[in-house]
Length: 403
View 1 (cartoon, rainbow, N blue to C red):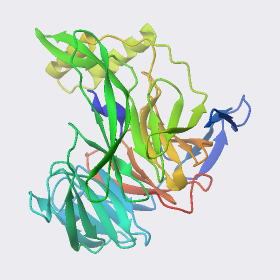
View 2 (view 1 turned 30 degrees about the vertical axis):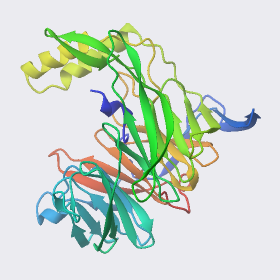
View 3 (view 1 turned 90 degrees about the horizontal axis):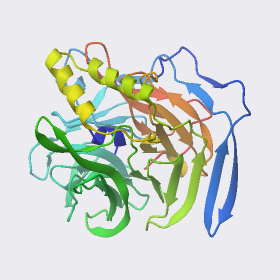
View 4 (view 1 turned 90 degrees about the vertical axis):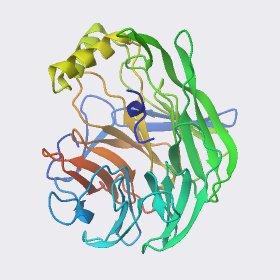
């Protein structure tokens, strides 16, 4: 669940780190109160804006050279305690481990179904001081390896829902898996987002959430019926924190923090922007859909799909979630038509305090929030892929790593 919106269908970096709150409003503040055993955190005021360095602390990827150094279809990467970086790729070699200076230290993993093979690796976490656990989507299992490329074991995950997505790893080694279920109906109806918790051995422990996930309905396109979501409507999503679950329903500027059993413990809220969808928004989105096509045929097809789906009355609020150290989390803001391209992330600490906003360049994708660095997947003008580690502003850095 790297981006909820992607399931359906660095503002430009500057030379220095900085923190600058927009003028014309009070500084960001927050208050905490209790309601029937649920802690409610309210964030108000102008959100501090942070920029990333012009150059990353470390950039992995090359246009030419040995294939082990070339990046392609990278879904995840992880910084280890010694500064080395584990990169998950969906082309061989599938798992690569680079040193702090960018030198290749080890690699392993080929496509297949054998114990030492992977079907489609999607996510990697630390499983101890010197071991890794890799979520293998296609083979429906967890694979355990050492950080030195030594094979340990595989643990099948049974049963798994349709379209399972890795939602993160808890401190005790259990895994959250989420699935946006597709429910067919004669009209638009909310299909559920379910969350399942699996033990480190792959055994299903319990269902921790079942909430309205996405609003789907039958739409006629070229004489055929397809299930589509409404334009601009929010989706639900969840991410495992160290000892909690961050959940958003995508229809409020709010994250629900649940305990590992799925019980609500905290509501984290912030003041977002106006959400009403106007005709100007619809026209701008339609034009963006047309510009995204490279041929006249693709343009016509994109417009047919756009025109077929109905339009929601309000924009969604949260486009993605990432876990952060010390039980914190980052929230990707929902982009409105006409906004600058690129992901915009809000950083929250473990108490729910809104620390600030970080904007990424168009085409860059945040995949991990670490102790001192953000790991961002980038592409250049030649579509060469890179794994980049950017130093966090001190106000957003932590002394503990995410799990």
